[in-house]
Structure formats: structure tokens, C-alpha cells
Length: 358
Image (cartoon, rainbow, N blue to C red; front, top):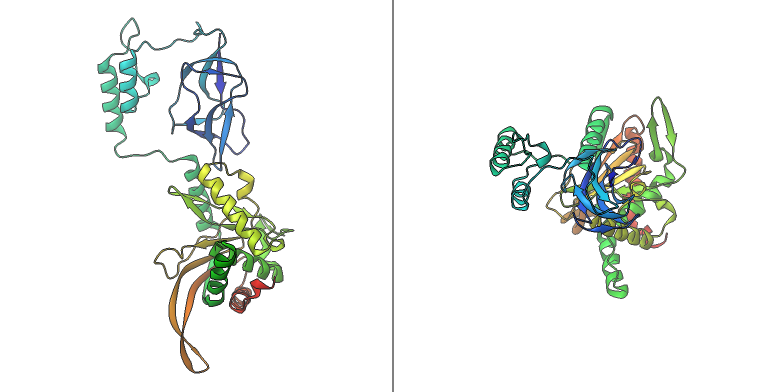
């Protein structure tokens, strides 16, 4: 008897999932508890375990397809046969391969023959109909849908106000070069900003607040997210309790988060709980930009590239490494005076080299 493998109840906020990768194929033997597939929720990629042991006799969805929670995605036969109660379409292996190449789901083909046989014409007609109905369209992944919802929510609900300043990065560049030379450790620029922002937020608790309905809350710890992209996807991993960590500990956490993103193993809880976001585009020819405030955050710091510029010191022009930063704040939480004080604190902290003493 064939046992259906379903998408389990993952959470109350999850309605759909996407098949990322099949670990097994039709004909493979699988044990109970063994991973059959990797599925993507709106926040992370998780592994799906088989609830039965036996031979996989059917897989109903291809990689990349989005399905509803509770849907049957495969059948495992304990007796190495096919469940008589389930009717399978009759199709040759050659035509099945053709259907896969053309992106045709054979389960959706209307069969007109009395013997239930799917023909080449059936597949070609289905492919033609699909291409005519959906020209140049690509399905939006669950993760992309979540990002769309959150940026839309931010745009519609959060009254953002923007403040731009510049930071002299000379001491940070010198310190970073020395650490690389002496300890062979490459410190991310994000680590300096996360470390410095955490210290400054600690001195200005208002930056650790958030809006919840008609009330305002304040988090017990200071946790800061940073924007990271991988294969055209945006992630916002969080450095939890950043105010209690050293610069090197934050740098190590960033490295671990980036590795998890690349491996697809980052967990939902590792991208939640932050009060503030760092968005760094300094590796691109972008002088400055405005970033979107993540829902639940008090603000975001957008970081541009480091450029050599003339500044006046003691009435003398001198070349310095300058980085433009733009602070966007939720105006319901942070007013202009507070934002100005925060940028002054941040600028003084980073330019003075205080990160060496903390």
C-alpha cells in the first residue's frame, strides 16, 4: 500500500512552501526519518523527513514548484507496489522526459483516450497552451513574497525620516590592515558598524524601541541585523546581544551567518529579534543611498563606499578616507534631535578609534 508523504504543519504563518531540492527520486528506497526533500518556507529552507519506509513510487511536484501546506508531494510503497486506489496516468518514459523538458505537469493533462494513454500531441498541446497563457513569467518564491510584503508594509506604514553624515575611516582602515597582517583575520566593515552602533544604541535606549499596535516596547538586549545577498535573494541575519560582544566575536558571527546563507541552513530565529539594521553597499560605486526600515526596527543605517576626499583640518586641506552614511528612522520613535545625537555619537566613536578599547 502506498503511503502519502505530505507537507507537515510548519507553523500558523506558513500557508505555502516551495520544493527546493529532492534528495530522493522515484525508485529509490527510503527509511523512515530519512530526508526526502528540502522545502522552503517564507523564511528558511528546512529538511522534510519521510514518515514511511519503502520504495518511492511517485513524486508529484518538480523542484521550484510552490504548493500548499498539507499537500501530498510523494508516495512511498511499503510493499514495493502501486496503491490500487490511486490511479496513475499511462505514459512512456520517453514522453515523460519530454514533458519534464517542456515544463508540463502530466497530472494536469486532460486525457481523451479511453485507455488513459498520454500521447506526444497531448504534451505538445499542453506546452503550447502554457506558453500562450503565461508568456515570459516566472513564479515568485515564498521568500520573495515575504520580502515584498515587508517592504510594502514599511513603505505604507512607517513614516521614515533621513539624515546623512560622513565618517572618517582612516583609523578603521589602519586597524583592519594591522589585524590582517598580524593575525591573518579579515574584519568585515559591517563588524565595525554593528559593534559601534550597538555601543551607541546602548547609550541611547530610544533606538532600541519598537511600535506594537498602539503601544511602544523596548527590547531587553541590543541585537542588530545586517543585509546580505546571495543569488539575487536578500537575507537579514541578526547578531544577537551585539552590545555584549567584542569586535572579533561579531566578526566571527557574521562569517558564520554568511556561510549558513550560502549553504541554505540559516534558521528563522537567526533572522528575528533585531532593533536596527545595517545595509552596506560600500563594495559598489555608490556614494550614498536611502534604505528601507525593516518592520519592527527603529531605523537602518545605509553605508556607501569609502572615497578619498579633501577635508579641512586646522585650516589646512588634507586627504582622508570618507564614508557617507544615511540614517533612516521611524519618526514615530525617533525625532530629528535624537537622530542627530545618534549620528554624532557614532561618528565620534568610530573616528576616535574607541572600538580598540571596548
